Length: 433
Length: 206
Image (cartoon, rainbow over all chains, first blue to last red):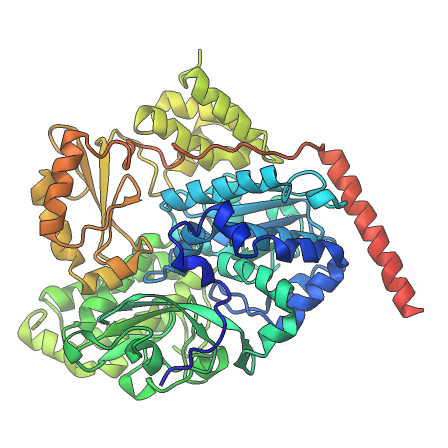
């Protein structure tokens, strides 16, 4: 039975049809967190976020408070918010920018105050045409209200926030590629080190990059205190988190769930959430955190939805997207389509990723469409090993960014979990489904 | 002579002014140029180069990296059908095939009447309404061939011109507010905040 008694921290307003308007936002306690934050010292605001142990909700799960504290020595110049959500089957930031843009804007202002930044950018994926309109409207409203601009709510703090549209490139979700796009260039991830934009970011200056959902948690954390947030969940995974559930489930959608207190089975089967697999079928496998994550089999359905819990089993919660496969899902086709995605989205800077993804895609294509060979599975794993040597988790990197090392996840999972399906494809001369 | 219309050029100048460096406005300006012409013409890209203090080569090199920018003319409606993992499972490939027949064009091509361009899209982040279809980057939420038929008719007849504006993601995005202090004042504000914080911290140490 799912645990559903935790408060809704970022999705409470979604039940209202006008959840995106300033009127609704103010009626439901909007901008109270910012008003409170402005009465505190900036470093005390940062301390609350640290106390909440809010893990970044973009995919890497780096503690937001620690990201901020890296800037203690060198004052930060820019705050950049990553709303370039493009990880396949992830749609929780889409939900937040369209349904509750004011919550995002308030979170951004609170973060900017804590970091004492006077210029912030919200990068929203170009394909979110409505999301772009709503975030800009929320910004316009906030300026009008006095929550943005010069001397916010009559304090000494001033801030300008610019909405920056993306233009269709998965790689811009990588924070250094996103910064390149913000500088008006091709979205090429930057060579590391420096590993963090906190050292060298936008225009070469110290920059914090945080995810949309991470920012959206801040008004609640300031209103209720970091301790109240940390009291939810368990271990390193505190608070609640938005999970995007998709694939062969009766009720796909975005669900806010308390971390660790619920399992994958709860999310997929509970009446509050996914309501089970279509036609009552059995789960064949599921992706626990975006297509960059290794897959899990049904034996791990009772695993808790927590960052470390999933990492211990060799995968990641990643972007918070869960895709369910049943027996109607061809795993070879799934692995092929995911690999084709990476091949299309590879920025082309690094040879293992640029060339490897295309080779892998073509081998998987021939397995799925006829022409596969018995030795193809060894060939696929060998190619994967060239991209991420050892095929362990977390993967070894041979490329500038983690797009490359994400490519082997689905292929390695599919072959090690469903080897018979691959041989069946070879024997059958293509997909038997 | 400016290829961009005066009103578009003014919007461009307003956006350039928002950034510490003009080149940062590149993506937004390319969206606006595409909104005017329906695609990125050489003339428009030359104007964007001038506005962002770059060269035409810089502009083309940047634009060609991004899926949403069209370097050749496209139909009035760009129909994007997702076939990525969640949509694949929900029949995205079948939907794409059906769209080709219904719109009268193959994937990547434009229909003879110039109305539709069909694209196979990567994940569009609306996976609970799969397979996901966007028209000019507006979610139309037609998940079956039956549901998409009336939609195609409405698009043809122009009945959806308001909901699905032709070209341009930023067509209804207008910034009204803005900071009314100078960058120098902002720098001063940051310096003061830093000093005050250092003072508080040394107080705590004592």
